[in-house]
Length: 106
Ligand code: HEC
Image (cartoon, rainbow, N blue to C red):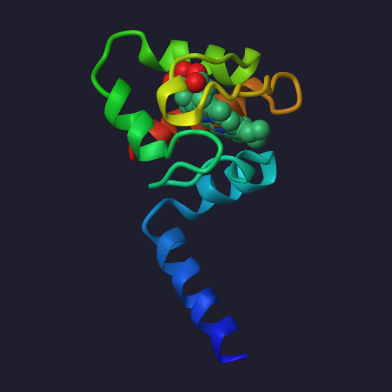
C-alpha cells in the first residue's frame, strides 16, 4: 500500500511539471505507451525531441506530418530503428497539432 502511494506521488510530480490537459490527451491518444517526457521508452523522450527541433524553421510541420503518417529513421541510433506509427485519422488533426505544440514547449 505504501509503495502504491509513493508511486502515485512520483507520477503526479512528473505530470504536474507538464500541462495536465496535454498529458491527458497524450495518454488518451496512446502516445505514452512508447514515449515519456524525459526518457526514452520505445520512442525518444519528448524533451529530447523538443531539444532537437526547437527553433528550427518548419519543425512543427515536419513533426505534425510524422505523427500523422508515421515513419522511422530520425532516432534510429537511440531506438534501434523502431518506427513511429501513423496516427491520422485515429487522432484528429487538431489534436495532433496540440500534441506537437505541447512537445515543442518541453
Ligand atoms: C508504438 C510506439 C509509439 C507510439 C504509440 C507513439 N510513438 Fe512517437 N515515436 C516512436 C518511435 C519509435 C519514434 C522514433 C522514430 C524515428 O526514429 O524517426 C517516435 C518519434 C516521435 C516523434 C519525433 C519524430 C521525429 O521525426 O523526430 C514525435 C514528435 C512523436 N513520436 C510523437 C508521438 C505522439 C504525439 C504520439 C501519440 C499520438 C506517439 N508519438 C506515439 C514510437 C511511438
